[in-house]
Image 1 (cartoon, one colour):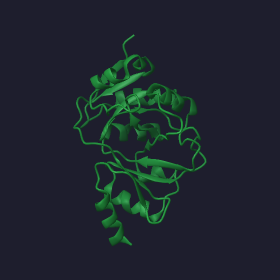
Image 2 (cartoon, one colour):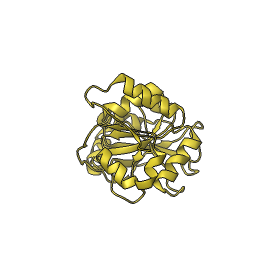
Image 3 (cartoon, rainbow, N blue to C red):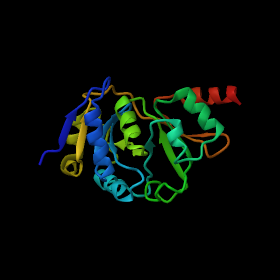
Image 4 (cartoon, rainbow, N blue to C red):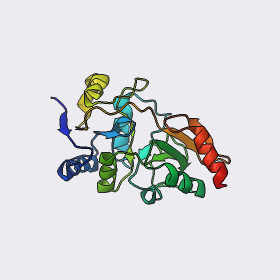
Length: 216
């Protein structure tokens, strides 16, 4: 059976379609959702069974943690321990292509973070996933909708092609159309002092370091 696909306007997302996606997520289902850095596999990150489905769909090794998206920095505070550097960078770059790695709170399941004590969290610059995160009031997995190691998909068609037979494990695709190819989010570890770059992405690490130096 073909995966259910719903066209959605990024400038004015249909509340009804967002509600349908939110209900699917609340039931432990997998939704493909657009972000500012490609299409992502989106589930309730607090539900270990749903998180397990994401690992299996992607063929992702369990030692590779999954980052999450939230609707605001206030929402993030429910899942990670924010420090002043995180608040400063959030104010400077978020919503945007920046993932902040911070100490996780106990509510975060061990599977999501591969047994570790930190969680990568971000606020994507995409209205659809932000409204979905706000409606569910949950952290949402935001890992690319592909088989691990493959290129990030920037259209619903690419998602279907890249997942192949595993697309049957996806319950709903929110189809924004083709996304601009912008690259990955920059990942910064804020559990150490000074903060360290984990992955260079769209936002320049040099720019981040410069702003942190001025701030401190």
